[in-house]
Length: 428
Ligand code: GLY
Ligand code: MN
Ligand code: MN
Image (cartoon, rainbow, N blue to C red; front, top):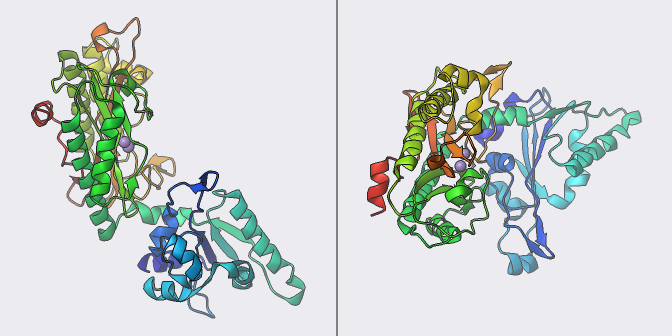
């Protein structure tokens, strides 16, 4: 309710219309697991599909109205699909001013839009939804001869909501800490379960098992379990290969808990011992990550951690004969991109790649307390003529979730080790 009030205060009058996500068919009559829309859930806490939030901002004539449209109670459907709140129970439980059957949306929206100037909506997110909004506005406009005025401005509500979501409140942080903790446990469990001869999907199964066992509803994204050369495929999700002694295993996996994501990557030797070449690359990436984490504090910009990681990596690439010339030249020419081709992190929240601008007025934005982000440098070495052979097919990424605090930062994912010695000990 506080978030809905905050949004209503940021609106320049008008009406915000925010639907939850549709249910989606997977094949024939089987659905994908349902996941609510992040914006809708952020503002309502309501998890059922077929629901729409309407916020009418306060005007000189009337106070603000927070309205939910949702499915009605239906004894027959509830026998098959389970409990649904229905409007009156939903109104009470989730503190709306009014709640109505979703079937009344087409009838009521034109009334709610009459005399309003602005409609706030996530324009372009769903073409069918854009059309419906246009239809409601046209219905109002068709009555203009009777003296009513229709909205003449559509504004993207995400501009307001993204800035709100970027700074996490205490409840969100509590959920994110727990999500990070569960994911850290899953990674520890997976490390201990890894043995040469097992298959990548067996390790994926261990991760999913720990997620669910602790109440997380789902993985926040498809888990990457990539043995050996597969780690050099950035979005490898087949997870079908057998694990070889002497290779590394890269796992990028995190659970979603009550609508909030976690996102951890660890890379470790399948037989429990790093080879010298693996250790060289691993410790380089770890040093880059530490340099980046050191920069994750308010007063620095979003880009400072990335720049810090790049400098450490570029120095390492020169030292190991992967890149030639000076560190500055490697940074300038971006020659490092042959081995490190992604950025060092992203915002983290309800969505794994969470909302929020990275630049403001053309400048990297400042980090500030309450922001949550990942720090995830990597190094991916594909076989190539000018690359020393002992580094071929090594892929390493180390990823943690970090909260910016007033004092500096808090690492949410400390529960899973990353020092070489700690990893080797855990795997014994
Ligand atoms: N797992 C997605 C990412 O690391 O960005
Ligand atoms: Mn990530
Ligand atoms: Mn990740």
